[in-house]
Image (cartoon, rainbow, N blue to C red; front, side, top):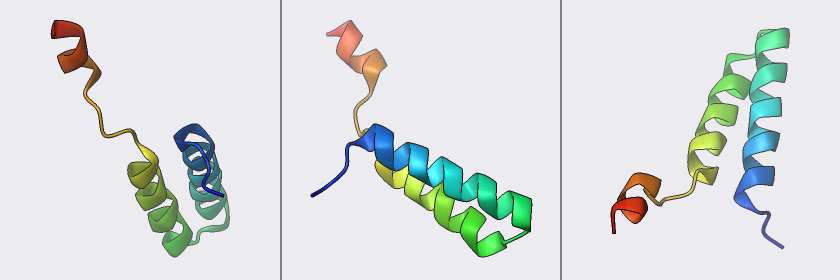
Length: 50
């Protein structure tokens, strides 16, 4: 079952934060890439203008 983008982004942020606390650069990179992947692909500004 796939998770909603908000949950994925929250988990990625937690992973990034834990990586920062323990000094794990790989965990930081993984958390940041997961956050980017979970970000919605829509542009809210464009939708408001239409």
